[in-house]
Length: 181
Image 1 (cartoon, rainbow, N blue to C red):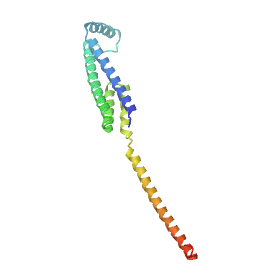
Image 2 (image 1 turned 135 degrees about the horizontal axis):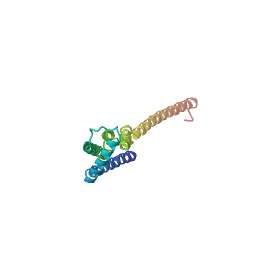
Image 3 (image 1 turned 180 degrees about the horizontal axis):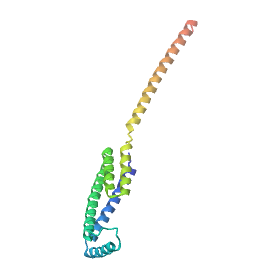
Image 4 (image 1 turned 180 degrees about the vertical axis):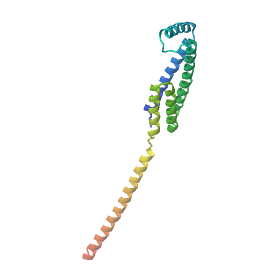
């Protein structure tokens, strides 16, 4: 069975995860530059002085460290998601159930970093892989074979009846006029 829709959904989900990986790498490397750190510290300190919403015990270095930790977390989650998606793509034709489960797991992993588009695409593809069964010609051949058997049996029975009817009519004719036959 062609699984073009499933392939397409899985590939698009993998592309969105790949875009997330690229975005996380860019953010990670940009946030490590000294220019970004100094600019962030000055703007963060100005923001703390201007508002009362941010606690004064929170420093710019703590925010940058938590931001770096989140980008590392996002990279790990996205790499796991894309690896599961690639394995699911490989097994679509051979083992659709395994591929469907892997696609659903990849979707659930991708939602951990709020990657909603990839989540939706992978979940839909996984459900389609689990629900849509392979079309096999054997089931149609079995039905046709069964129909042929029934037709042959019915034809045989009708042929027997016709032969019996002919024998009976011939017998009646012979009994009525023995010289003709």
